[in-house]
Image (cartoon, rainbow, N blue to C red):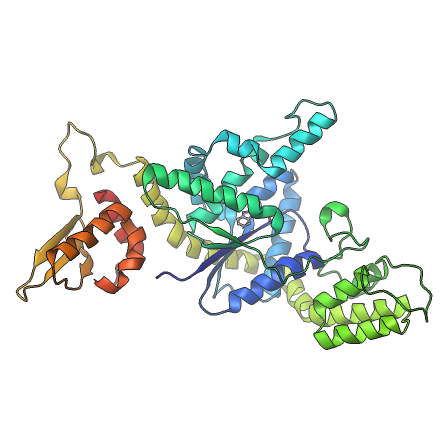
Length: 428
Ligand code: TRP
């Protein structure tokens, strides 16, 4: 079985704040360190273009976000970390998916509908200032996910609909062309808190209530001083519930530290002192990362090298898979003609999947490519019917059946999953 694949994208449209760190970056970095999972993290700069029309801001945000993730401990050797726009297969797949996506499905996307509703409410034409990019957002996101056969996609609740759409789009594609795309699932971390911002509402760029993750120390102190509190005087007991300061502290502190602050609230700690505690606690976690962040920001060519290496790693998977998908939909080299009725199939150019009996009296099958290279070799079957049933499984499900059949196959050195997938596609 292939390992669990986890993939998520980060839109490069701003500067990371504490809410991004607690809600997305920190849990993702932790998850990437767990054994067993194969993680993909990418900078969604094509998505950023939908919202941001300032080239310098796109570039700056890409730099800051890349530096942030690495400073927060993402290990590019361990995960695949890349920039969306370095993978030409993403827009290529996006088009194939566009052609199987119902326009009505996109009409129902929350972000698009919100824009339309706002226009209608203010008496404008429904599509005023709505770009086709905004409309197509879910399809591009589906391409991001489906190209890498991701199983799990960690996202915020606001993105669940997009993952459901990616599933629907994958299903439409599979229905038409065979089971090539993996259906992804959203992974919502229940234990991850949404952080309140300076004004007590959810910390978000759109509310302008954020605390920058890597602001210089003194600026961090100033921003924390700006968190809203009530007007209780020093010595008066304070409420933890509904206190933004308390909630932010909790997101960084251990259970004991949190209990201690709770007791101080009850004892009437002065707001200024509580803010100082919060500042120190956050700075303790952030300071070491801030140092590597600054080093990275000041060395853009190092970051670029890391992203290029990531793109190479990503494309090792994306390029052959995209070739298979092109083949599937009929964007084919004319020499590999397999389906025109008048012309005889070019037999010699096709792989073969055949069953045979060995001297041992048992039954086997093998897959050999057009040049005679062995791609799959089965173990023995007692009955020819069992061998035939397994072959039928490969013929109908293609490479999707491989995981299940692993125990029936002999490993062959130097043959990649994509070579096998391509051969099976040519056969189907
Ligand atoms: N839409 C996501 C967000 O705004 C970012 C994103 C783009 C993404 N492509 C993705 C997330 C693919 C997960 C998978 O948060």
